[in-house]
Image (cartoon, rainbow, N blue to C red; front, side, top):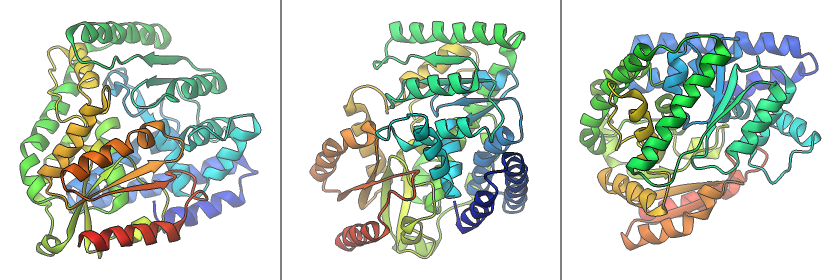
Length: 415
């Protein structure tokens, strides 16, 4: 997610007709970057540097051939880790290619096999990555139906291309006891199927330990919530992406980062900055937005919604499967739009933001379908709202000049 990533991508592009060499370069490059991030995290020992490290760790393990499941961001990864496997977000793999400006190669590969251009570029890029055969095959692929209608057909394609099992968790829209029981039964069935596939008995004690650490981490962060609202952590725009992936994909590692929260707060100079809330995702490639909201900017993205979608969930290690069912059902991003509206307006009030930016990823019904209603709600609250169209993955499908013009006009209005 930087000029270094783009430069590395240029090197890889030169050798893309030599997939074995590309695999070697990709492994070497990501391993070096992971080592650098780990060293920085140990030296600085603060929240963002650890989250930067955790976000890359799963990707690096997947590229290096560790036994990995490709999942969507809301899959119950705690179960996968309890089986001793690694997890990586399929969306994150697409983002990795985008950060290196290589997503076009994957998209072209997918489209050459008939994948529609109307499909979200996260999905097209992920399918293309599977077809390019640059990454080791996953052990299995797993997804939920949370947020995205394209998840199930796309993960079905991942399963077919890689010739690996597909596991789908159907998450109901309403949080009640009947749906919790329905979800718990699905998780039990998932464990049974994985035991048969992996020829390995599931370790419930390992799952309980993961949830115990996750609870400890989230309790620390939840306890610091009000202080974080007053004194948010200063982060680069791309670091908000790292944080959300670490929260969703590395629950077994969060504790180390959570314990450093008290060390990292915004500086005195940040008091003078205009506070903004970011909704949905940000582009994964180096672009004009990174410059607009860089360290020297007068404007500060204080948080994003996917960093807090666990806020209403309290893990119970003694009832691990029931607890994971609650995690899915209590996510404010599912169900009636009023749940999301109440959630994001709470964030806006708590963090005392002076404006909201909603990034509408091209092809994403979830992000574009609800934006008008969200805008109306924020306007009722007197909080300026900017709806920004773009593409999180395809760097050719953006207008840097338009970003700059629209955002600068918006920011000028709320200064």
